Image 1 (cartoon, one colour):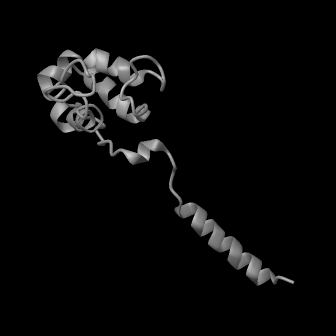
Image 2: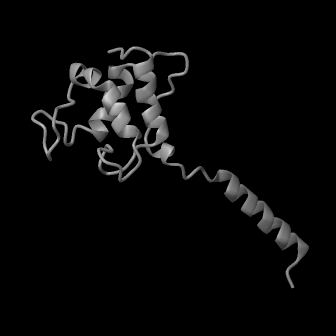
Length: 121
């Protein structure tokens, strides 16, 4: 027979363990800067996303069938809307980018905010 003291100790340990767990959200996998009240900029925010998710193919020269490079501000800003559209498509949709799978919504939101704020360098 298990004592009341053992049950209470087990419940306390379980509560502590559960409270220490973090979310399994994909948003936790990519570090998104906290830009509350600040403009999103290419250099400060967007470049890291593009470099980590796009430049593998959209290099200069482009590889793996990519039709254009996305290696600098001018190239990315001139295609910002089409980049956002491609990133927003569901996995498996034609022209969804990146081909490895849809990025977390919080990452897509950074690109969207950058466009809404005028694609600042």
